[in-house]
Amino acid sequence: MAAPRKPFDPPSPEQTAFLERAIEQHGKATYNFALRLTHNEADARDLTQEAFIRVYRAWRSFQPGTSFVSWIYRIVTNLYRDELRRRKGRYQEEIPEDNAPQEYSGARPLAVEPIEDLVESQFGETMSKALAALSPDQRQVVVLADIEEYSYQEIAEIVGCSIGTVRSRLHRARQQLRKLVEHYSAKS
Amino acid sequence: MNQEHTTTENIIDYLHHELGPEADAALLLHLKSCAQCAAMYEEQARLSESLRAFARASERELPQGVVARIWDAVDAQAPQPSVTQRIAAFFRPAIVVPVAAVLVVGAFFGYSATHHASPMITIDAAYYLRDHASINNTMPFGESSVEPTSLRSDESASDQQWVASTGASAVAETR
Ligand SMILES: [Zn+2]
Image 1 (cartoon, helix red, strand yellow):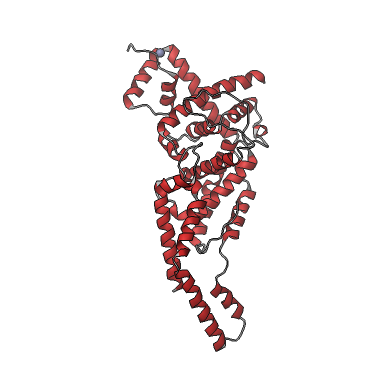
Image 2 (cartoon, chains in turn red, cyan):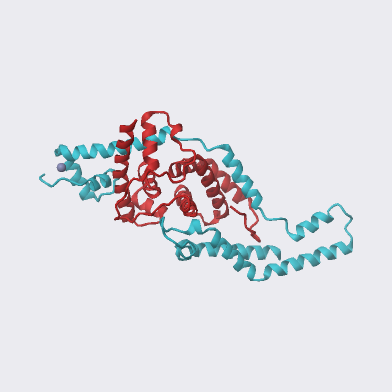
């Protein structure tokens, strides 16, 4: 990402402290969230790095009293979406309509070095493959609802869609996930 | 209680505490008396538990390299020293002569004058909105346009205020 010229905005000690605290307290969670979203370590590192740079630059727009984690997850989510769009040439992902039937394509969106090997158990491998085979928005909603345990309302805010979309996407994602888990556990 | 079987969708909402109080209570009651729906619930609950177990097992530490790269990027983006700072640094070891003082003062006012020009603020606001489209954009995956939505989002108003106030304080500083 290019560093554009910015005429003023001298870094203040508060701004530096804000970033330092943010990395210390939420760096690990952000990285793990990015890892689950992208299913790829290199992408997760890039996303995390870029997200914290955005946090640093936009630190004043963070509203105290609101959830920092939700804020940075939203940044990560949006960066990931932008990245997917940029890579569209390489990965032909059709954004599914909510009522469109979804088929398991077997495509793994951004994976270069998948994280299956990180999880040694058979169960972990099955779940890892199944999650990787979901579409990015399905995976995202499953991660937010079941791993991060956010409410539909909170997910809608992070993802930037309606609660109805969250609900229907989650329903379909879980159906899909169950099929995929069955598929991969039968294989292994 | 004699009611119809529930749906998978209802079970999923129930599992995520997303049913209203009445529907929640009714489903709880039904699950107690209906083995078929209870089995459906068990299956969905197991899926959620598996996901959490997977998340726990696959949790990673934040790589130190990432932290280092964040600070490198932040340092690289720090603004260059201003004209006055550079001149001050240039003259620091030298004997301060009236000519130097005049130069510094002259450069200072020249520098201030450029900072009073309003185009600086609009350029910065445009930069900010463009660069932070990802932050401001609250649209889901698949929406085509990034910039217009950032202008529509609730946050862009406060961001612009922030830019405006930052600009104002920067102007104040040069006085
Ligand atoms: Zn029943």
